[in-house]
Length: 50
Image (cartoon, rainbow, N blue to C red; front, side):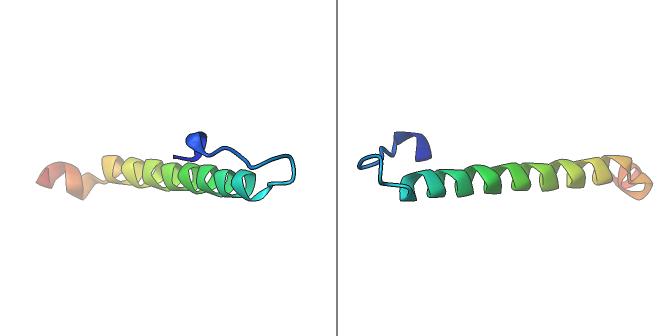
C-alpha cells in the first residue's frame, strides 16, 4: 500500500517515514519467520510427530 502513496510535495516527509517503517517492519517480520521455520525444521521431536 505504501507504493501508492504520493507525497504532497518536497516538504512531505511523513509519507517517506511511514514507507520506511512499513519496509523495516516487513523485513524484521520476515527474518523472525525464517528463523522460526528453521527451528521447526531442525526440531527432531517435530519430525517424528509430523
